Length: 156
Image (cartoon, rainbow, N blue to C red; front, side, top):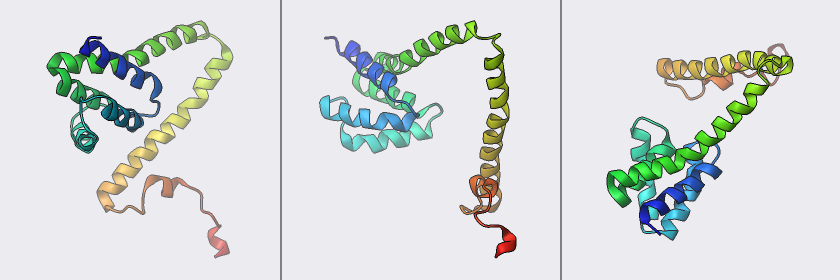
């Protein structure tokens, strides 16, 4: 089998089965390091460091790095396309499925109810960044500030 096609197929499998972000690709990358000579297990921390320091999603950056190590620019394109292709196909299918339910009142209610939750999550993340930047304290993070007290203050 052609090396670039094999690279595409392996990263296609990673893209299809790793759910949860870039760190979810790590077990698959360790398996690739054992199975192929594209990179070694000792290179994975370096891949993470490079991927974290460059713009873009971690998994995509690691696929691009691995592809480049194996096959230059064409290898990086093959590995990256292999990783993102399953997500693109799944999103297209879901969007076609949801389009049929666009005018359903229950679907509208669900999305209407999700808006405040998403707003709260974004505000919590922003508050955590703001507090960390202003006070440099790990104890004053957004989840700590937003969580209800475990015991009422008057009961102390």
